[in-house]
Image (cartoon, rainbow, N blue to C red; front, side, top):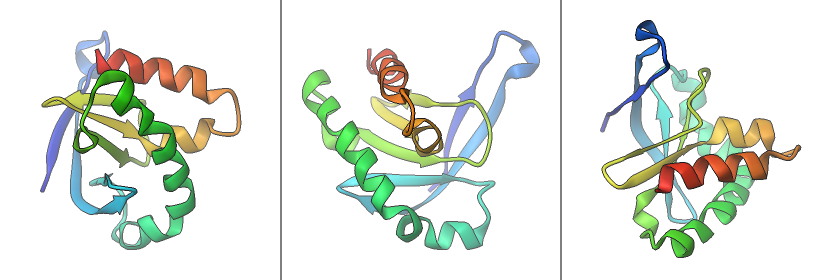
Length: 122
C-alpha cells in the first residue's frame, strides 16, 4: 500500500509529494507507516527498534479519540527521515510524524505538538 500526500508551503516550488510505503506494523492498535526514503534495513526492524517510544507516543495520541470523537482506526503514525511535515489528515484520518515526537519529547514539545494535532483534527 502506498499513500500519497502533499507538503505545501507558500512557495510554488515548496510543494513536494511524499509516499508512505507498506505497513510495517501496529503499536497499541495504531498503524505505523514509513516514508519510501527510509532504507530497507531500517524499515525491517523499525517497530522493534522503537517499540518503547512508539508505545509512549500511542498513549499520548489515544485520548484524541475521545476529545474529537475519532475512531482508533483514524489515528496513524508515520516516520520520515527528513522534511517539515509534522502531521496531516487524509480521508478522515490523522497521520502524525514519529520523528517530530522523538525530537520534541524531551522538551516542551507536548504543547506545540498537541496544538498542531488539534489544528489537523478540525
